[in-house]
Length: 162
Image (cartoon, rainbow, N blue to C red; front, side, top):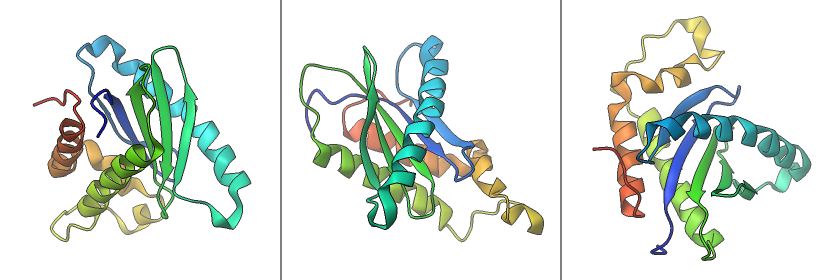
């Protein structure tokens, strides 16, 4: 990975645009709400790119937008779960290949957590249609998922919480 690549936040958004997990890797907690805002505002751009992409849409959506201090990238899984990565803006060029590899690692972390046969979500049969199991990612049962996300962020050089 590029030595100057620093991940500030990652957001997993359900197909119904509900946050599954928004994890920040900045030291100041005062900026955590900023990354919630960034995740929600990027959903409009993701929806626009998906609707204009047609059938040959790649999962990797590329750079969604940039602000003065961050660059926001998007990815959509085949099951329509959106992953938003926010990197600190630097003078170096961020290569799409590197960002795509990070997205694939995040996607596999999510997939591994969902595919866990021992993960018991205690949901009702009618809740399966509304994708409410996604919303329980913040519960203690999803600790392994949060740990995988933190490991990926540490691997690329970000300050993940212990």
